[in-house]
Image 1 (cartoon, rainbow, N blue to C red):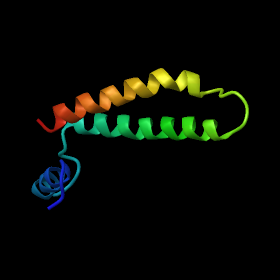
Image 2 (cartoon, rainbow, N blue to C red):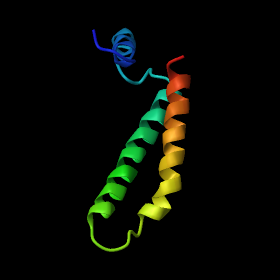
Image 3 (cartoon, one colour):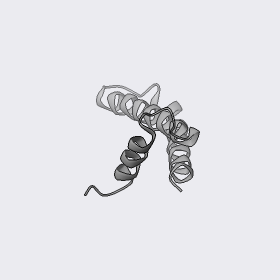
Length: 79
């Protein structure tokens, strides 16, 4: 058995037979996690380049906000 919420999502998808029946909070969380991943990737890529970072200082507050939104909506989606 896998740890975490993955089995719950799998059972929910099997019960609904598709992803269209998932709650709106789940989709908001998913969008926030994808945006967080992209922002983190951009920040990491800039840290590997020589010279001062251009986007990383602007993405710092956004990544914190995206992380907070994804955690809040994960709790709401799976309560």
